[in-house]
Image 1: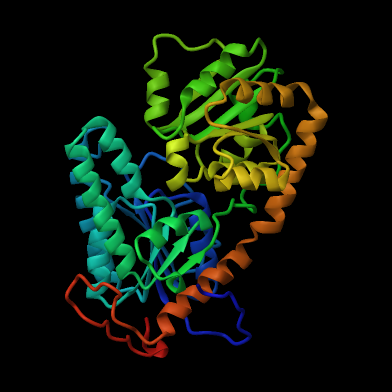
Image 2: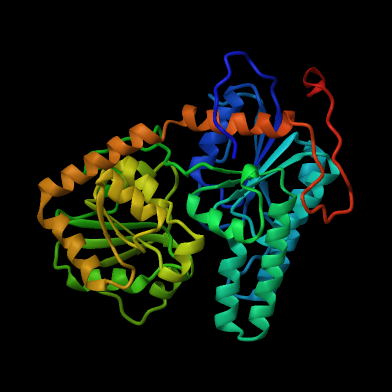
Length: 433
């Protein structure tokens, strides 16, 4: 495991490829901070992904060494059709691989990526002698195995096994792995990966971009939110979440209270296709990054959930943005999930088990009916974010890691399945463009 140490001398700039498939706000913050430190940063993401997005374009205040690259904008992607989804993943990986061959980065940090797309990224990275860092935000292959096993018994398990083989091989051939929680180490231990090549850096919220806002924001006025209690679920609502929790809560509300579901994903689609929704539930599409702080500020209680079977390979990171916004959180998740531990550690809300529909409902109503407790939890959450989400300190850890993998004598991959042998060092720092 890499131990974090700060250096007092200025280290050489690197060419970095920061690849975040989903284009999340917290990763764009990392890229911007790295570019401020004179690294040449290419930030790439999947243009057709429908999840929450950060500020994915150059701003007047951004360094000239920062580039944003939307990849795969012409791909007709489908999350509901397995064959089309697989074809889209492969096509996306090939487009990104070409970008890697063009940019020739020194280091590639790649996360949140479908396994077959990551395979193309890894091949291209080896071709240009880049150092490869696998940023494990979740275990894509484990999620795919569970989903396919449920939908296609027999063949689904076989396909899931194929994805696990790919993901394991990618991690084995990486120069380093970054987990977002120590919990993930159990899976990589079982795969035989050396913990000396694994670091844990927890995700964070974009503290500077999410200041605390007053309740009656312009966003609240624009959407004609009433004076009653406002409950908010924001972000991806997918198969690993349980929309029934939201429906049950909305059924318990009375006017003028309401539950806002500002989301995209299969769960949001199932709600929009329902014959009838509770009167107090309002469905909305994901909002722009510019409106995001005002939207969070307009809420009184934040909601999040993760199903038990998904908890071992996924962490609901929306709770990190919630902490920045300073409102109480009600989370339905297993007690050992990282998000559960953070909410309890920060004293920022109430955690119930994912099957506890009644407990979820009562916890949300408690904060609506007890403003003092809601204020205390929100303030505690914001204080936690201010202590733990400073982007300069987080970037220190990634920058140390990048130099660690770049400067270390390159060794043969632990399981070099590409047949390329040992990667060769690049030119010295002053020759880098």
